[in-house]
Image (cartoon, rainbow, N blue to C red; front, side, top):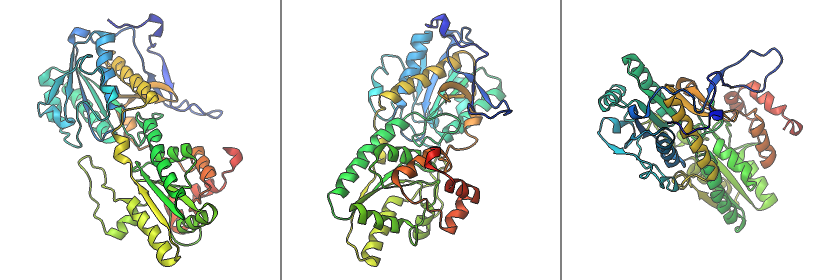
Length: 434
């Protein structure tokens, strides 16, 4: 029986608008079902046999989501049969399972990583759905990023094709914050907060040496949100480089010129670098093959080490300046920590929303806040495109105002990559519009 005051039930007619800033005569736009407990549920507790699986890379908050799904099913609805699928998608057909109870997951939110273990790849839709049928599972909770959610969509379609009554719910997990539609992904706030420690360390180091240059490489394969937000939060960063904003090294308006300018002004500088930035330059230097990991993600070269060496070589050999380079890569330290207070609360909301949706009989959905209101979003909507930093957005304008770094738009090659309209829009940005 659902433990929930009647007045907190969500009406079936409640929806959440994707666009809340509109102009006169704008079209109605897209709306999603509002997440939350329903007065009428589809599943009876004694008939539910649920399972939880975690896939892909680590991220702060995974254990909190697992814990709250288990506690939500058990405490709010009285469900007893909850399985943990160990080792990602391949755990479905490798017979790796563990019985989950509120007691067994009681303190896992205090640990980093995932209680259920994870893996990349291993998705075999037919094998997975066969296993779901064989075990009598009728609720599947899938925690993972873009590739994992695409796998969840495939499971949902196969379940639907076979006509079996299974609710498939996705909980979006990506430390890069690159999942579309939702406001942000869990673990992001923790990552930005932990990144401050690396930035602070770099700043202390470079301040203590003459001509100190510190480079901090953060997560961000295709999206530079962590680098951007960590830079804004720190105020000690002189330049932020992200995948969405191409840069160049030599010549007027280039990075080398800016580094030299900052060294003359301040005697030191800190650069924050997203791991996906400048990959085309690194690939040219190392003649790298376009290899991919088990999840289908392009394997990235270490742009941090490359840039560190480039800056050192330029100032040593060309400018004849002695500089002290410091390079910090805190990637795995950030991924491995438990979630902070705000992410713990956020993970709880995501998990409980997923439980309410599945118990109400919804399927093929993922959960997340849209304009600060939690909603049920078709999985296909969040996998259509990746969320990236918009160079014409106010947040990027705020960063440029904070660091006073060059936009690198004077280079023709960069202009071609970014596009003329975006270049014009950025040039027209004014501080008063921020």
